[in-house]
Length: 69
Image (cartoon, rainbow, N blue to C red):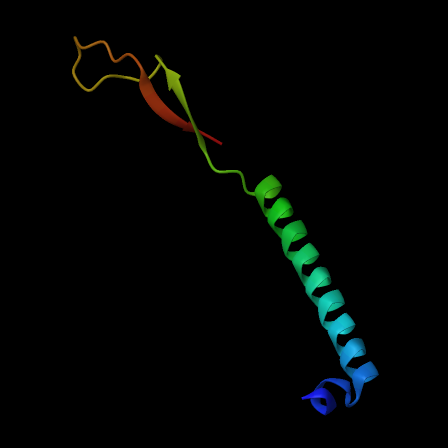
């Protein structure tokens, strides 16, 4: 068991460090990409308005919902 751990020990340490550095880099890029996507592509919001025409002439259409972009 001891030979398995200590055989090429420094190459294993270097490989582990490179793997961790690669993981941190990719994770940071994905986080940056998500932040950029959230800023550029905001989902539409809903606002209440009273200025929409009603379907029936005598009906007052209050609190009509409209998408705002």
